[in-house]
Length: 69
Image 1 (cartoon, rainbow, N blue to C red):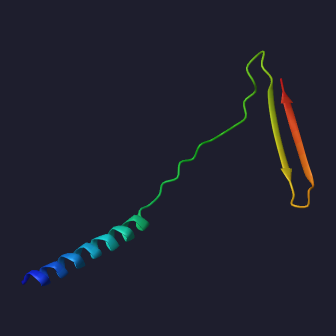
Image 2: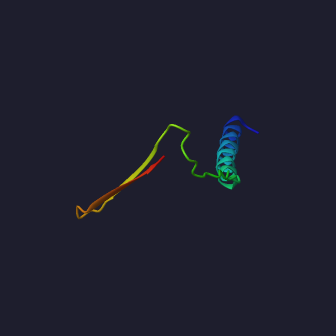
Image 3: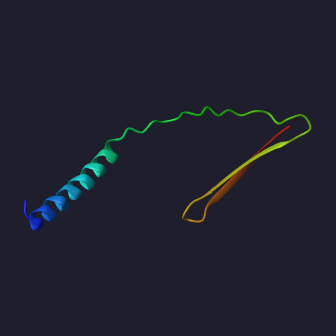
């Protein structure tokens, strides 16, 4: 193999490697972790305050809260 041909072959191998690595990355399986979340009452002597709000593009808005002892 002459030096110019060797350079071309090396470049092709590098391009093939990068393409294969990109495909392998897309094929990796992603695992999902499930976390169970549940409401718990506040500790004795504490108060839990939950709030939420929303607004629309027309200017309407609303909010609410929940106090738990």
